[in-house]
Image (cartoon, rainbow, N blue to C red; front, side):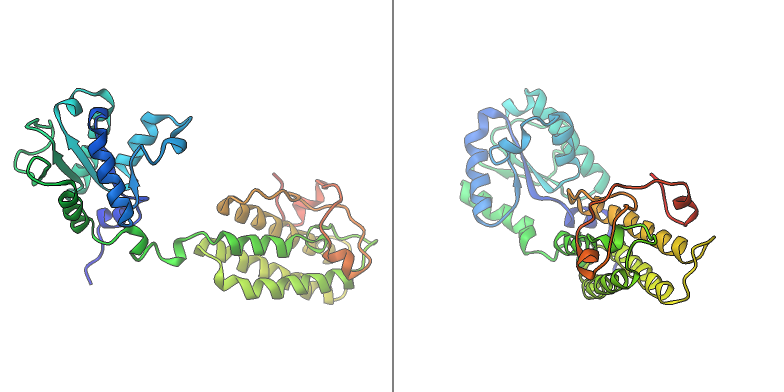
Length: 308
């Protein structure tokens, strides 16, 4: 099978099927085309659809990204007004740069008059509204675009961020048993039972977490929970790198992984960034959310965790 090119991958991963570049004087034509293609299921960047999204944005940067990276194709409505506008020339430059880099038919020109657009080859194939109706233009554009992005095989499931599943992972771990520093005034049995429940829940979720980076983080958390269970069931020692240091180190690594999951999934979750001081006598205590203050004693670093 022929490997996909960089241009194929960038097109398949684009946010928009088509970006529409036009002069304000030609808005009525752009509006008709955009609305008809939208009804056909295509995702379009047309400023008439994006007014709220563009509020407060740096338009130079945002429009540059859209025409250079975030659309599969660019439709340019060529007219004398188009060549006279600074903003349309800005969009055109980004579109031309993209077309040159990918060496494929990225720009789809639609002539409204006899104006020549600098940078486009005079032999390029184009549409002409002077001898075609808007419905005919839209039909030809649809043939060129192929199926709308919504109907295409998207990025593989492995590359998507499964926010709902990651939220489930974070919720399962949001318990005192995970965040509490090991000390004499807590029930090791209650902590162990709660952590075992957490591990079982994560084992059910891990295969449904994407992308692979997040799945590896969840698998790592499961491994740390398993380590804690094994150490907790062995002969207990306080000193050096014994039971307490090993368990607290594993918990710190779990907290770090949870922070990474929340960051990747952009989940606005507030939870302790280090171990907390809590009392825990029953499994209900161990299952409840952490409430104690965070501790940053130096021994935590020696326990194999992180400080930051």
